[in-house]
Length: 177
View 1: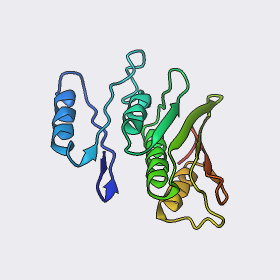
View 2: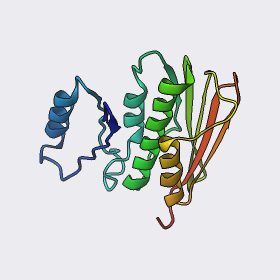
View 3: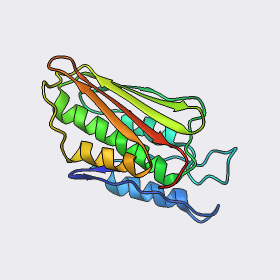
């Protein structure tokens, strides 16, 4: 959920028949007027993965952002086995979208997720906003960099006055945290 004043991600998991869908629907209904909610179910072919369809969450996250057309490009059968790494990817996407809306003055955001082999996920983002001559990273970008670094990932940012903003993030999908 993206709530006013902060970002929260809620993962609801459990055995079949315990009411996860009903709970998710209640949370979405309660938060509908003040938050964006994304929901998805496990990949039907990988029942051992609690939330394999991160694609559903990303698609919901990118739909209907006021004043910004988001062009989302996801690999086929996009999934991330580790829920903590999936959360890092979602938080990065949220931060990219938030920064684009708040600071870029952009009409378009291109957001592409790419799996590099089986061991790394890349996020490539660029916008058609105004860019800046000298980037002063705030808490959001610093937090993104820290979350990625916790798993051995990295963040590269390129911007220039009147050249928009481009960001590339890499997250290893396995290894020590």
